[in-house]
Image (cartoon, rainbow, N blue to C red; front, side, top):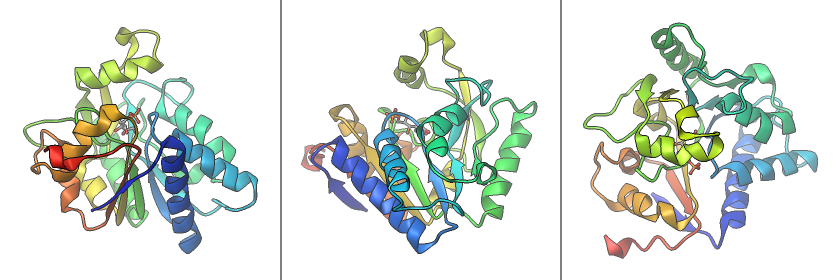
Length: 242
Ligand code: F6R
């Protein structure tokens, strides 16, 4: 694991965007694994700026997102499809048919999960996977558990996750109770992974992820087993505390 501690969120965002842009330049039709949440918004802003300034094109890029809330459709402002349109897709020249997110409205979620895994495989796998981390150590919506799922699956969200994400909803009651998420296998098969953490409130989870035991109760700790992970945070990780 390579760990980079940046000065602040702006530096983290800019560095993340530059890594993504380099991957796109090297392989114009690369498959980007994308995340939602607060953490990558700054990097998406930098990507949009690079496109606006003519420094980048995303015409041939393919994207697969990590997760989507069950029961929310593309028109719902709380859905992750809506989030991606707002923060990135509408601001760059990615082709909509090349952007993929699990369908939160699928009538048969189990079938949708299988479709999503098959799609990732058909795309040739994820070249660069962007990840945030939950305060409880989740990645995607792979929540702490006694055992983790390999494949895309429907997950019951941890109450701490619903509480953390309720900031984007009118009330906690409005936060969906389940989501569709890429499984640990899908994440671990990515050729390269960028794990982002912003804000001191993520320090403990990140410490456990990078130097704790590999433990399904801290899903991000499995990233220690991946051969090409770069961690970017904007605080002093201070791993000696462990
Ligand atoms: C989002 C996702 C989640 C978030 C995590 C951190 O697609 O999969 O794992 O990355 O919950 O969220 P923020 O960035 O809002 O702190």
